[in-house]
Length: 304
Image (cartoon, rainbow, N blue to C red; front, side, top):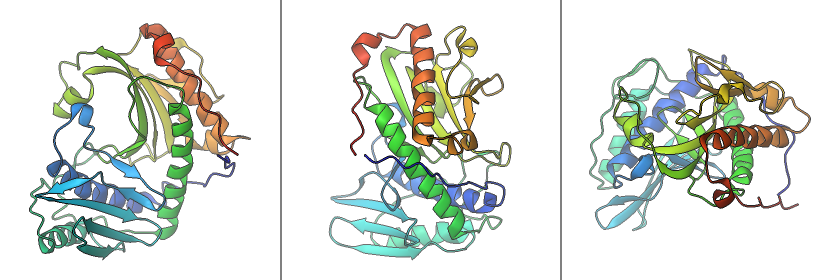
């Protein structure tokens, strides 16, 4: 795999409304996915997956037909495809989130797909109803292109990181609740979710895990960044030095963080990000007593 060394700049301040509008739009499609798939451990049925053109649902079920929905961020379309050949296409263009929501529900109804979802957003600083929200409507194509090209570069490194693990792990997932692209590794041992957590965390945090992800920021913390943590938090992990230079432990977040621009401006962004993935995983796995001899393997070499 030929590594790319030029990564796009992300102006999350100038792109804030576009990113929030896309975030809310993915929540609409993500909730349709949840409604049309069986419940799985660790919310495995929930995330969207990256494609060469954007984001796509997993395979959804509508009676004896299957369905996929894709955000094509290259042609700027939302496509609904069913296994019987039926199709609907919506333009991805500036429009209030409530109009996007109405268009999605109308397209599904036209296709004969019966689905009901809760329109309220989740895991965001302020909950809004996607069925009535008129305050988010931006669709800046340059912003979308920068985010998508960032996702593809990050995903390539995350897949390289995944190749060094033989235990259970997730694919590269886009979690539409928190709007982060991430990979989680599991030790194979159960864990107790925090006693005061909500339903989402109770399902997600019932197993020991090590996670690394990318987050484009929001109004609370606008700087795009990579983050990593081990759950449950091993004692003393916050004192471990990790790579690359510029990575640090955030007491407020309870995780390691390295700003996106630290990676982007490095001499070799893929290598810098891979060092963050590997060093933060190693710090947590060692202190948590993971059986690393059993779980790890020699990573595959990139193909030129």
